[in-house]
Amino acid sequence: MTSLLVGTPATAADDPAEALGRGAARVLLTNWMGASTVPSRGLYPHQWSWDSAFIAIGLRHLSVRRAQRELETLLHAQWADGRVPHIVFNPAVPHDAYFPSPDFWRSSSAGAAAGAPAGTETSGIVQPPVHALAAWLVHLADPADSRRRGFLPRVYGRLAAWHDYLTGPRDLGGGGLAAMVHPWEPGMDNSPCWDAPLGRVEPAARGSYRRADLDHGQPSERPTDLDYGRYVRLATDYRDSGYADAGAEHAFAVEDPCVNALLIVSEHALARIAAETGADPAPHERRAARLTEALVERLWSPQAGMFLNRDLVGDELIPERSVAGLIPLIVPGLPPEIVDALVGTAESSAFRLGEVPMVPSYDLTGTAFDPSRYWRGPAWFNTSWLVERGLRQYGRARAADRLRAAMLAAAGESGFAEYVDPFTAHARGTRDFGWTAALTLDLLAADPGADVSGQRLDTTVGADA
Image (tube, rainbow, N blue to C red):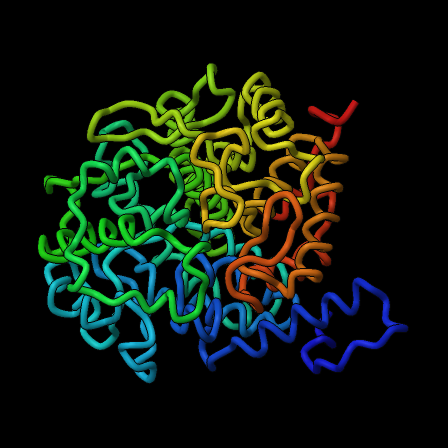
């Protein structure tokens, strides 16, 4: 698919898949800023952490060198304590183009004690750890080039430090899982899962900030002013604490199943990276096994038939059901009864896998469901991609094939939208969105006999009847 880098207009005679791939390539080329890719030139004009990981997974099908650089640019902004910030700011972008901007986060000063880089402005919070998985997949796209350029040796130490941070200072619950201290960190910003924990947070005064996101999006599709005020309050308090983790007081602290599932899969990827670079993979495999045990012990709910978030302030599971609780299907080695329950929940009236175009972000029968508002119901391409890969891993090939076809159709028909209506797949949010285009390329190129990390599957285990 490297020929798509040239980018020529589609014609009626084009093969539909080739035309779709050309459109996705156009989005990534347009959003490329020279060293990294913005999710969207208008709404999100900087580099975002988990966006860049997903973008690298797709970009490897166009240019392995660009995919490598995407990840290296992000990791160059890593803090000394190991955290990979959720935004790396482009100094050429005016501060009023996005909020919270660099002058709000003050990373180089407020984050100095935590080791924020002095020469690069970033946010002080994190996002889900997809990066080691992305690095491994980028390597697999062209191992010879990767070895020639020393790509994995350059990123291995930074990725290992990132995981050490998540399993060390961010193990706030003491049970072995990484905790998130702001709703922006799990990536599903205004999920109904956060409604109860956010109810404890006094919102920032309305006149103390300006919402730049409403310059580019419909208010009905964005978080409410009340939620946004609470986000600003939490970010302000975290900043004013010097971005302290362990031992600090957090009004919001949750263990999220999507975050920790991605950490497990990335830990397995890190073991493969270690072996490739001559390091010992065993510590990473042992950590992945411990994390998997903790994920099941702390977040699995037999009653819900899925994984749930744990509110660490009250030390209890949050009953709201979101797509985050299905994403652990990407974790290898889950007990068969848990896999069966997860697939059953995905196919139930709550998520209607196989009936609606993609996987909704929240329980379709839930009281807080909204088909248009951000993470409160719309379907997203990155989470659906993860579920598709998880279904394939556990032998549900027919369900995975249906989801893949629906995602590709929705990507093209929506103009590579940020997210879509879960019933109609009509575009919501911004268009020409980075990870939507990138994961479209990956689905077009994907080996249906491989799991999320590129390993060949044993199709005799848990296969479709």
